Image (cartoon, rainbow, N blue to C red; front, side, top):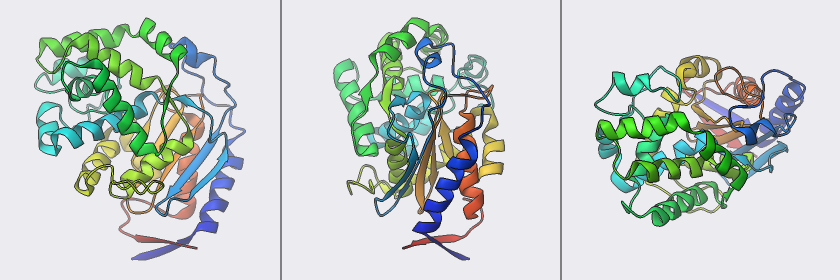
Length: 321
């Protein structure tokens, strides 16, 4: 089945999504991280990156916010690049926990591996795997360069957010040392946790995340810079991870209602990948009870459903001028 969609249609639907959702007052900012609690709750932006490099944007698409857990996708890609898909499967895994993103119970239940790089335990383990082992500065450079390659422009560390996160990451400290207990962390636990905390504190925009999503959708080639960031054979690996655990314990509900693999973060960002078609991102700080942006979810669902797009419908989608 073939489906043709025009760029003007996409622009119209993105604008409609913005108008439909911008007045929503549901949810509240993350308050367990002081910096996030103080972000303007009315900020809202949407960006779609087409595979020709064109971005369609509306609202606060260029506001820099904390990437938070969306960074897990980026670092998962980095270790897939460095180690290969099979080694990542062996050292971390690719299975959904069915539990909250910061679950300690999940580690105790599956002590043979941390399950997936897209929950906190697996993401801390992923940071420990980044090469070169034992060198914090060079590991950090690799993490930032990888995000820059994916987004097509450099993220900026939000120092206040980093300090705020470091002062309140008690649960993640427990996770790091529990991973050490099970030999599932591959570098110094404190260093690995600090790298994870720092990467979550990087400032990005909705437009940047849509380009990163577009890079995944485009088989590893950044649509804007045209750089081959990773091998195309890794695209289905990372997309499957996003689909199975991008919304943590609510990933099934998300896929059922939206039809697009997407990753969420408590900074208010959501990044969605429609392979072979486009990347999409939306940002708004107020979150639902599971830590997912209320407006970003509604906007992306609106775009997908209004355009009749779904990763599971078997349609071959062509975007035309």
